Length: 236
Image (cartoon, rainbow, N blue to C red; front, side, top):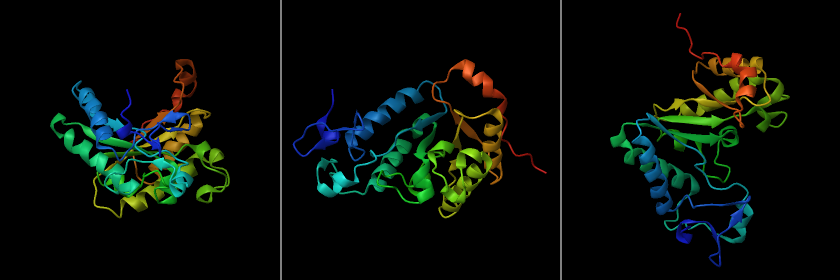
């Protein structure tokens, strides 16, 4: 049962179907509480980290905003960036008694653009709140020429190195102990590609990664598992 007061609607109050999905409003405190209540249930199962995915507004709504055809339920007249940061602050405080780390995913392209791209995801704002920030710089999500790389899909090490340098520049500007633990592309990659993505992260003295493969078929994963190497940097 959808609460229309917590969802994106048209100006007549009808639920808005956007990109084949209905969307809660990230401005809505009711939506905040609903998601954090679920997180509390998970935290009570003795996990040590809660990772929030899709912490964002829908993309492709800029024209709707300009035309004033969407009711975002922005009760407190907040920016999209401050709404997402506020939600993550609320989640962090609410989960404190559960002694879990709080992590959040962020699209790769707002990181490279160094603004929120109208979806509210701004790396410094999110990273100043959470314990772990996990961008999604998948090779095939970058167009040719991105970050000065002729074809990012052909240069996994260089792509992750350049991307990580952009992350580092932004994290260095804020007072935060947030850990950068990025997603990397596993699908449509060889074991060598995956190793090179990890080496690219290491080139900026970062450790840790997560692999997105999509279907998770064990037989497919077996073909690339040799690429799942330890990213720990040995101290000299």
